Length: 152
Image 1: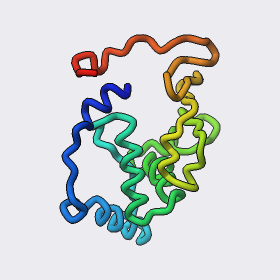
Image 2: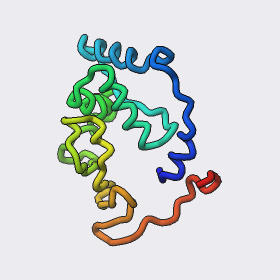
Image 3: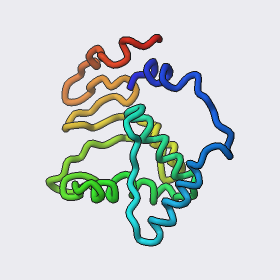
């Protein structure tokens, strides 16, 4: 999602005091469910496609999840929850494998999932900042329709 769209939809934010929201407690409770053998996946409800997923990862981190637990919930466990573990969620022969190439290690800090250097989608490689295709063709990202009605 272009910065102009994200900025228009998130600024100005109406911030809540810590005691007015329960995201951290929900993340702690979800971790207890996971540790007791339950399955917890990641969801962003599509409010801001792409970036909201990363925010969800950071909420789980604030609730005490380790980066490894979070990445597992976002991949293997999530694909199993939606009944698609046979085709997505892990790297294996015959599975779909869209991927991110990151500049920083998410196991050190889950916020590093935002350090996207390249995106591999449908066998093509895209620049993480511009989404220009860099392999197998070199081609700029076509004009986007999204956000055209929003102020810059």
